[in-house]
Image (cartoon, rainbow, N blue to C red; front, side, top):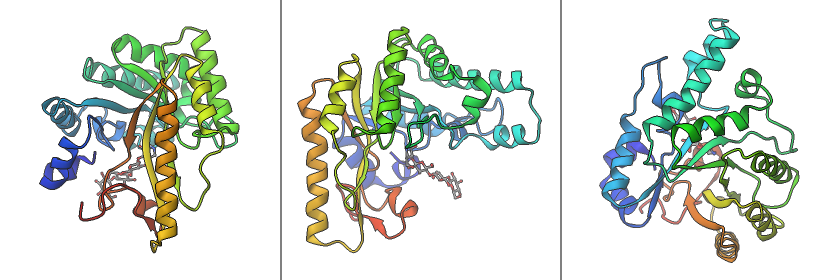
Length: 288
Ligand code: G3I
């Protein structure tokens, strides 16, 4: 859900309220949004979404505490300028996870605690989080989040891990290790940002099953299927078959119990702004 559009477009709000039983903040719960200045919190848009969801009897997916992108510039620039000691950065990072999780305590069904911590090759992504919190940062942030909100189901979320590949293997190995170490991670989020120019991910159902075998819940967290414009009936047919395959695989694996679109309409989708000449990725067109 795009907070600005939700607040200004009645048609959008009506669809969001009636067509879905769960909502996720596209940007409103990210660090740059909730703490625009150090120690100064702005929960406004995020709280509005939580209230909207409660009014419409919807669940809320929290997105996202630990991510290399959309961190506040007071922190990233401050680190670059040497304004903070190593210990201060560590404390700031832990405080972020604790404060955000505490603020929404009891209101979040599933949290994307850690987002996109691996490269496509399966190696660990370098980030300020990894650099300052050290090699066990993922286990620690899950523990901090669980302590702050024991009710929320805590997820690891990533893109490009829908099928069997070096990246999903690395995520699988990490989650297996965390679960063996009693780290409170209960789910894996597969973003499923797909495109009709690419084949459907290889080994999708088998991949869902192996995550399920770890005792994890599985959510498809950011589904969209972009098309290289202009549309043709063949491209739309491929998009249809990709959406169907996403659903079919998820329905075949009981632990896969949650599907979220990343934007439900083509006018407000993030897609065209990020992939030049591509779009039409969502179920509702630009006129809803
Ligand atoms: O809020 C500022 C606004 O003040 C400013 O005027 C405007 C123009 O510079 O930028 C606005 O910030 C934008 C923000 O979205 C809110 O609209 C950022 O520039 C823009 O980069 C940001 O894009 C978001 C993107 O994450 C950032 O990586 C997209 O909306 C959002 O859909 C996208 O979502 C991510 C998920 O969180 C993680 N998975 C991938 C997914 C797609 O990239």
